[in-house]
Image 1 (cartoon, one colour):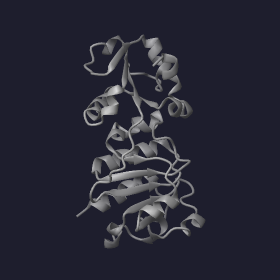
Image 2 (cartoon, helix red, strand yellow):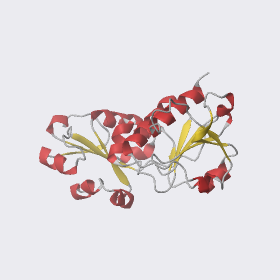
Image 3 (spheres, helix red, strand yellow):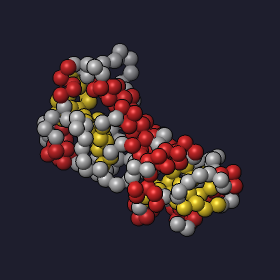
Image 4 (tube, helix red, strand yellow):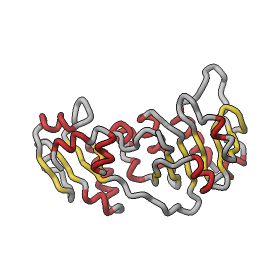
Length: 241
């Protein structure tokens, strides 16, 4: 890929047009190389390196570029000197036995999404579903904050609320009112719905689907809990014996 096109991958419309995204830094490249052993399409990734990483061992096609060129294509203020152009991950339609779905409705913060991806990949046996109008999971900030977990988590994009209502028999929603996640019934659901950071899920939409509400109890000193923290707590609770 030409360097001018690589630079364009910082923008969502060009990522979608070219079907590729950026992965930058030693740790993420190592995670990419591990993932490529299991996902054949990732073997078509292209590596761009400065002189400091000229000897980096990789089966990917590798191009040596200057530090100035790296600064032009990098999304970070201080580039590490190693970056990959990676094809979009293949859609995973095959649910694993006992797999639970986490549905995020219009999540907007890249850092939140990256942290959630990292958490779900850590615990394993989760599938992440993103609604339309959610932040792009291939946004460089999401990819960095996921710490490479994006390669290890089944993920589906542009999934509507109607679709999850048709796909899953039992849906739980994390709301401001409801039972505690520590309640034994919390583990009985197939899909767990979390709303937008600021607005949650509009109640007019929730009335159209059959959901059971749960709420993480707090002191009441502040209005709400960070979305990534809420997902983390619930994922842990689902796997706790």
